[in-house]
Image (cartoon, rainbow, N blue to C red; front, side, top):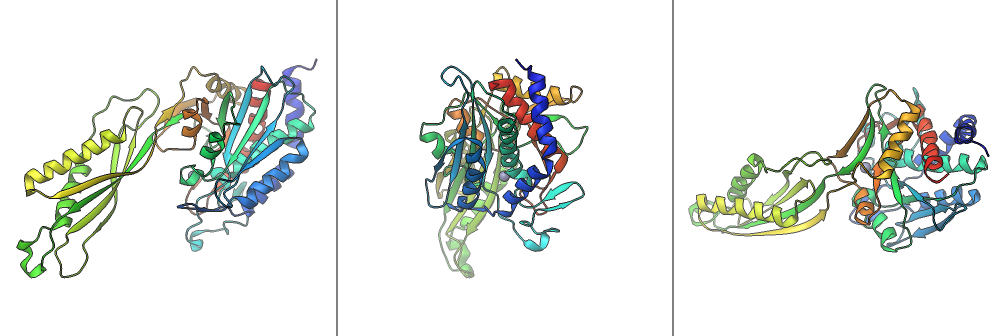
Length: 411
Ligand SMILES: [Zn+2]
């Protein structure tokens, strides 16, 4: 029987021989627009069909999920020879991107997939089409090498990550027919700086969005003493939130504690009328254990403190949206498997095992009991901004890293 390192060498050799094909495939993904505008507005139909067409000839069995029109996710499985008792490794990447924003801010057109100075430029190059391209390329060279796997590999190529994942990964997992043993979330890992540590992500903070409405009393502004100005009341409340520090014990995985930011405000009706209403939207980022009830309690407490200062007024606090903070323990096998691959590629490089301050789709996996770690993918530059790009060498390295993970876990 061939030993593991010979098997890997054969796959790596194929990957090296076909670097141009891998890059060309990646470029095609960039040229297929899949912007997610939020509020259910997005379209992953073309890109989902494209990835399906790439995977079918390789012998993968796949299925589309379309919880809303044109919001397609594609899940494909490469079946191993010992399906019933063996491991099922999932690789995750998302099909949608954030919108391009102002085209004038881009040096290279965002959908032209321009190659310049060792980088591929365009919307989605880093977030997260490098993941799709490397997942599929790793599978392609593995299949072409003729390696027989024992376990299964599941590719989760999903819609709607950029707007919370309800029309993407959440709907896929809700179906109940995807149950990997664990998942590698191929969103980052190989940093831009050659000396920076490899990143191995273990979890992330959660978010809670709350709307605070204050009711005052309208009056002619020439007799403003007869009114109760809701904007003034809100400004006192906002000032309190700005100065607030929520005391919490640091979490052993998820960084950043509790932060609360007032991000939108809307008040008043007319130039010459004392404002009788003012609404504010609060974005709270939090660590495990903190709940929306905790946040509503903090908000109401601060509204009460404003009342002590100003006299009574009516207020309402509504939770608009929330996402849990979730994490994976370092003792989970997927963490050591990702670490093992990094060590194999660069034994000297430090590995930074940490949580993210921002939230992600990984919470859907972790909530479903699927241990998930981030890594083995190119990090890139300017995610969500103009001039997004990825280092091509890092992308090519990530293909081999993912192939190695597959062989180590299900080979
Ligand atoms: Zn993103």
